[in-house]
Length: 262
Image (cartoon, rainbow, N blue to C red; front, side):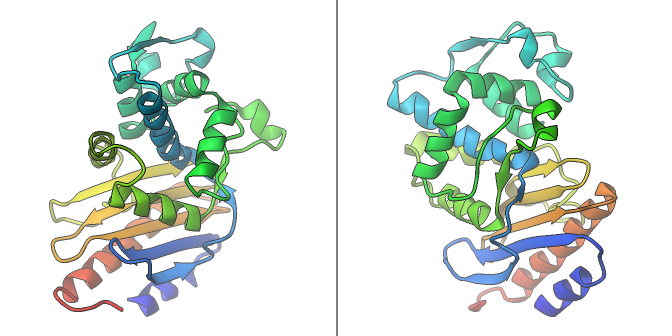
């Protein structure tokens, strides 16, 4: 498996950061450029999801609470914007933020918690290089050098904690996994896998980056995989590479059913 993946990586002219690890183990099967900081794109929405739920638990607020949607938070690539909604429940905002990567919902939730408070939460749970520095579609801030960033190692750590369900209450921990499993964007990790499996994952892409990271509930052994591509000239090529690597890993776990992988 490792040789196949490395031969694919050697043929591309962009950067590939990736990891593969058993869900129940801290040992990495594959780990490449895991400490490089890169633009998170929409991956940042996963720690935001956790941060909002943590805030609700600590303040005894419910998911049924409705938030107003300010006009300045309505941006492109958003089902909230398409519906011209004036308000949404917290539950709706969280679901749209993940399953369709809704940018308007994300901006409303950033205002609800506060950007700095979210960063404090990220640091508190152990994300050392993940930082929220701008809202979605805020290209003025991006052009000034303010971007949302993370690392492969932070994402591996985050999804391991999501799998362990030890960051939130049992109810909210399961809700996080349920929402991630309802992801509607399947152009990366699930692209070439024909089996009907659950993947609790999140994608993220911009003009020069393409990411997909998540928990694969494999019939033989659950694992966590993250593939993060930067300095891309063509995002579609990136999605296909993510799909090819993901299929190699999926087949590897199938061939090693019932045996130790390490």
